[in-house]
Image 1 (cartoon, rainbow, N blue to C red):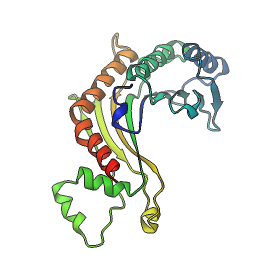
Image 2: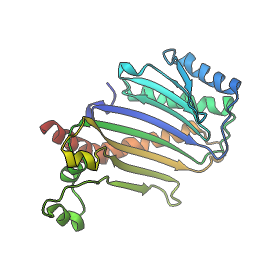
Image 3: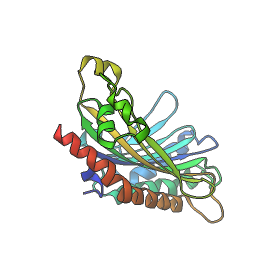
Image 4: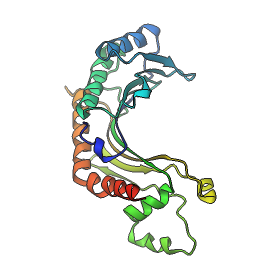
Amino acid sequence: MARYSSLSDDFYVNMNLSTEMDLPTGRDSVLHYFERLQKQYPTMRHFYSREKGDFILEEDKERGHYRWSTIEARRLCSGYVNPENMEDAIEQHRLVLELAPYMLSLSPIDCEAIDLLFGFDFTYRGNHNQLVAEVLGVSPSLEKLLEVPRGTVVSYEPTITLALDEDCRMQCRLSIENRTNAYQIRTGEFPEDQLSVYVTARRYGGLGGDQTYVQVLDSLKQVCCEMIDGYVAEHILQPLARAIAAN
């Protein structure tokens, strides 16, 4: 079982590498990259492209857990939804970052930002915004707003970003994404939808010296795990899970 899979209904680990220059779109470069990825993960058999020129290789989504990878104009992405082991997802991202410099001509200096996202989805039928406000609370200066007669929380998606070094190149962001809209609140008809909590570590700028993309990934993983273990799991994920289970 993945390290954090018990904290939510769905758990995923995504890696995004944003570049300053366009990534290769030639047939040979794209196919050779995905063929090498498929060699490591043979069940990644579904290959297609979008109208805007993105290329995607992924596993069958119907199994409930699947790998995917994309090449976009200026972004290389990799993800694993509901991995059996968290390290399996990290190993996939490491392989992508090992292949990219050689197969996609991705230089260490051609990096706008690289980020690692740990996502937690909760299935909940109800007002996501109200739930988050009641379970996680609001700042003391806003608490009185929750007492407004007939007041209903229509939008509440708390987020905070922390810089972890003096030049602000390493950052960590916690964000909550709700999927409840005003129409659902007005009608009282709430579909079963995902309430998401994201923990994202991001490192800005090109790499220097002998530093590699894989080394940066490992440092981002450490940041995410420290944040989840020390702050997010007990104070955000577990309270949300208990409140949803009680409804």
